[in-house]
Image (cartoon, rainbow, N blue to C red; front, top):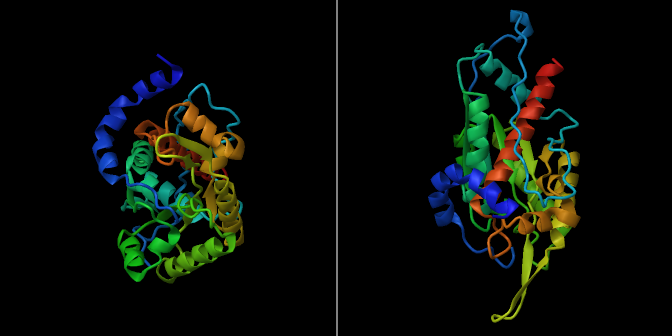
Length: 302
């Protein structure tokens, strides 16, 4: 058995439970692609003499072929997520009576459910008052969610933190335009802020994909070079709007290795755009780990 095969076997208990929802959710990629706080008013932890404790981290090993992997961290130089860490610490200390909710919206990588459900399961084990819900649409871009109906759906889920995962579909067509993508992200954020003015937001970058060529009898796949452009655009947008980012693309190898790592470990579907359940499970595990690390850094500094 290959190293990738052994890694997949270790996750079989998880993805066998999740695969029915994932299979029904996956579609082919297109060619082109203010809620009230759930918390009661409480005084600070220090007023009660309570010091929040860091949470133990679980190690989620990568397949042996992975190269050029970077530190698994949430990028948040402006402390945009600090209000969420504070609420989470208050909930953990039982100074607040309500739960904490993360809402994760995005494209088919979210719609397949394995990615967000895995992240939510790990986080719930670490924080028993934390819930994690997702809302994904196959083939979606941030423009897909920039409607009053979609914004209302997000608001009604009452997020304490909102995770946004787009970029694959924006970058999949050869006509990708960075300026248009930036404007679409701006419009989406403005619509969100009209109803969720204070909700902390965490962006994630796309994981990487290939584009199809060749003939029907002999297909060829080459790494999509526009993913790198979309990632750079998302990072620029986050910096200029003071949002946090989890750079999934760079963490797992970036332009040089991300696609090669995932494909070499046999964690991508035959379309070379979507991922197998164990691939999405690994992404969810590492997202949850990055969130716990950021929480620990917050409580250790306060």
